[in-house]
Image (cartoon, rainbow, N blue to C red; front, side):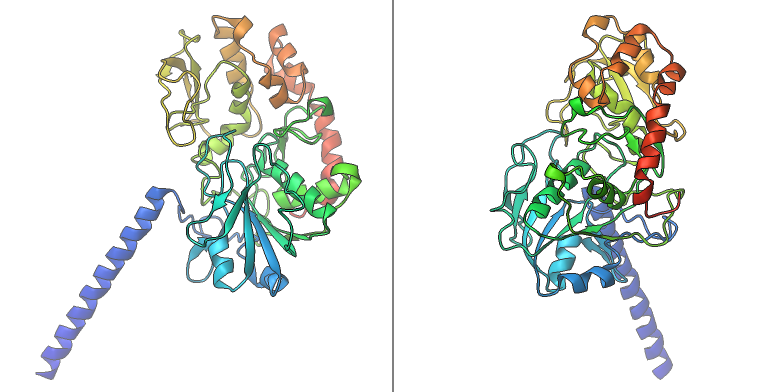
Length: 411
């Protein structure tokens, strides 16, 4: 009788375990569908730990301080038990967060590129959210009032025109002026140590290019912060009191899969790899896939009718009114090509060559993105990719020498 009872209890325990696992697995899949966390494990990323994961180092720095946090959906912490958002983690650790600052695309990362984001309140924690985009890119003295220290945690992608490094600049500048220290939780650069592209000429400085660097700069955001300070790029040469919490077990030669998409139109590793090459299309009449599910993995326009691939952009998350909305575009699908190293201009050159209206191909924003007028002039003259890229080399080499004192990781 006792053996039968034990057997029944064993079966019951096994059934409960299986049901519990099924429920947990269902919740994990739901989270993936919502796009909150994609559960890329540390083992998949070679055991790399981000600065946020090294919480034993930075939590003591925040104890009994009034804290501000600049982050978005990419600010996640992986503990021994779970993966949680940085803000939720800090709240659970009794850190006194005063307010959240949010970059382009907002705190939850769902707004269009360039969309005006309003201040608000986080529905989960009730904390106020201050938008650092639109007319308020730099925190004001009033917005920094009663803050002792700020934590910065954004996943960058290593490209000059990706605006998170511009938000970093303005935060550092504001904090330097108010004597507020900044803790930067570093994250790997998914484009590694690759340096490529024309160096920005300062007369074309903008929010999509604030410093004299190539398009691909080959630094983590922590290294970049050190360069901003060291080169005295902040207004009036002020320097910010920064502490970089380094990534652990990381070298730049290591591949890194982002656990969370960094913005609505960079949905996967392929788009991030192609971003620096295809983003130049944002300064032309050619779509780079906004309004599709292959953002920055395809390109095309109604003026490239001789090209083999076609798609029709329609409004979606991150592109409420995409270029060529509802119009059939012709171009190429690059979603399955092998990973590229650096910037490739062949698609831009091909689109210009095939365009039926070359006089309308470029818009003024192209020079802003390129950081120089020279690239458009070179394309219009018919220069080859090899000829164009050769003109970048001197600037790239000087930049590499200039940034070398600020590097924290082996390539």
